[in-house]
Image (cartoon, rainbow, N blue to C red):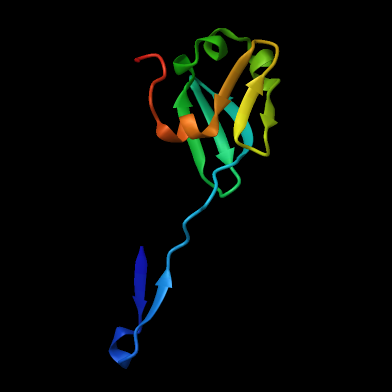
Length: 98
């Protein structure tokens, strides 16, 4: 997305909007029936926990024992053997419907 700056001056200077080049996980929290993943660029992804049966059935204590892997591109819960990529969360698809 480009934004013209001072178009009436005869010279158009173009400023480009900030577009993040990577989406890396910073933290995870659970509220009600949702999982919220905070990304390093400030976005917060919120997805239903029911999309992930292992997390849905896990205790609150088990949900809190997560690891952020590969510099932020994946989430892992060793105790319940659950792995989720940030890319799949960004894609927004219900993984159980396919």
